[in-house]
Length: 180
Image 1 (cartoon, helix red, strand yellow):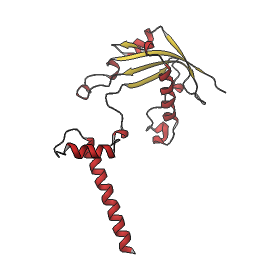
Image 2 (image 1 turned 90 degrees about the vertical axis):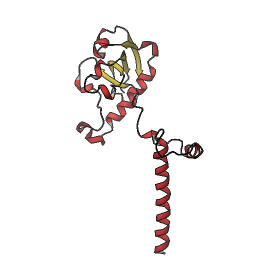
Image 3 (image 1 turned 30 degrees about the vertical axis):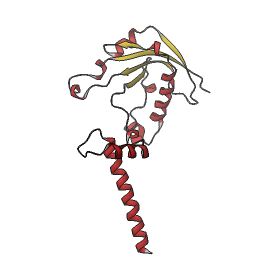
Image 4 (image 1 turned 60 degrees about the vertical axis):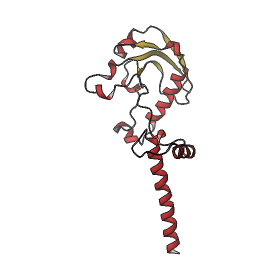
């Protein structure tokens, strides 16, 4: 009986090792392993997701949002892995990300304005304010907010450019909450 369990464990471990190795090899772009296109297409068909679900695209814009009334208590509780969020145990910050995403999805594209300077200056100068209803059951993002979608700082420029100086698109929103 003990040998059967050991053999089963080794087979399952071997299978997972092969799957893990294939998923890493095929997640890479052209590589030195020289995998044939036929084998690659079979593996991609069997495991279409790969490892892409672990992170977002590094070229996606960074979302910055802050209350325009300068109330520090209303600021977003990001990033989630900070001490104030108990190193990720408190889910408050993650819930705010989902809430902000639903708010941003309601803003028409025409309400976003390009900004070539510091995004905070652009938001201050922005006169057009979009009204959005926050339909969240327990809203935390209410009143007037500035939202900016910042282009990420290229790695090669990381030491010489401030993220607030990157090109961005900005908008102002007045979020209406029905706290019950």
